[in-house]
Amino acid sequence: MDLLDNYKKAWGNQVEIPCKFSALEIYKMAHAKSSSIVKWIFIIGILEFVLLNSLYFFMDMEEAYEEYKKMGLENFVFYSQIVVYAILFYFLAQFYLNYNQISTTDSTRQLMKKILKTRKTVRNYVFFNLSYLGLTMIVVTIASININIDQLNNKQILLVVFLMLIATIIILGLFWLFYQLLYGILLRKLNRNYKELAQLETEIS
Amino acid sequence: MQKDLEAEFLSDFEKNQNIAHKICRIYTTDKDAHNDLFQEIAIQLWKNYSKFRGEAKFSTWMYRVALNTAISLDRRSIRTMKTDDFSDVAYKISSDEYDDTEEKQLTALYQAIHQLNDIDKALIFLYLEDKPFSEIAETLGISNVNARVKMNRAKEKLKTILNPKTWIY
Image (cartoon, rainbow over all chains, first blue to last red):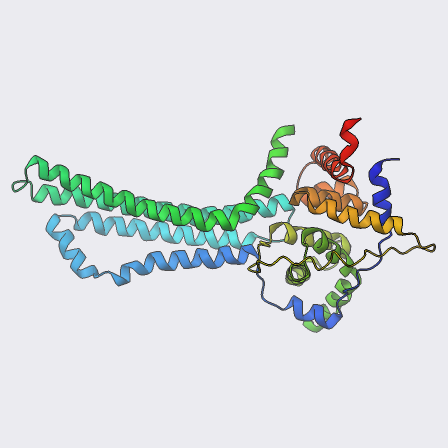
């Protein structure tokens, strides 16, 4: 007889667990607020969309627009904003659709796949935003050098480019670090479990 | 309608709550975490109950939802103190003749399972509950063959933990 068979027998013979809940207790529990990771991903995701977009309200857009106009960038700003908003709505729709499909009644693998996919949607949106931020900074740098080209010598141009580069890297780096921390912690376990199941699938097939 | 559904759910869950308790016991080590997980299972079951209604046996459906909740719920609690509330509670065995061998085996078994990873825990749990491979594979979302391979590995791991000396022979 297998070693585990004995243990399995003992398992089968265990009596009901002493801390049984009454129907009333179960009723209260079933109506409590969920603290599942899926819910947190949803809340944090929504917060990210809201925060990133509310940044525009805090900035004095009119003044910024005047500056852009001086640099001859009003077309760039106008058209890129249209694209940015179109993409924002695309991501929001994707995020909501993915989130809506998550259900604990799926198989474990399917469930984890969907959770990670929902998460990836927001991550991609943030990456998109960071790239847009980087692109804007580069364009502004080039434009400001362009209009002041007569007054600047080579050294000064290099200095401006260098400073802008450093500033861009620091800002993007901070965002990236924040991201790694937030989701690294939040999704570590989920990622590990998913890899465990997915790895097996590829091993055999 | 809602009231009927609720009453039906409560009666189904109350009858089968032992499944959820066993899963909580495998995935948590202290009483607070046990109850947190139990509550989340209750929430998930109720949330999906109207969709389930009569599709399969309640208990079969419950295994899946409860295990998924246990595997995907983030159990890192804010509580830093780890109280091992259950270690002093003996695992009771129902048997005509009183014999503590099985109780000791059960305690050792739970302790060993605690050392496995989340997926192996689920596999071993379904094995102990005598579930067929087809159901195990479907619950976890992997193929039948994979379920068998994975199960063998999980069992080997469990055996090594239960009887660490075996590797000498």
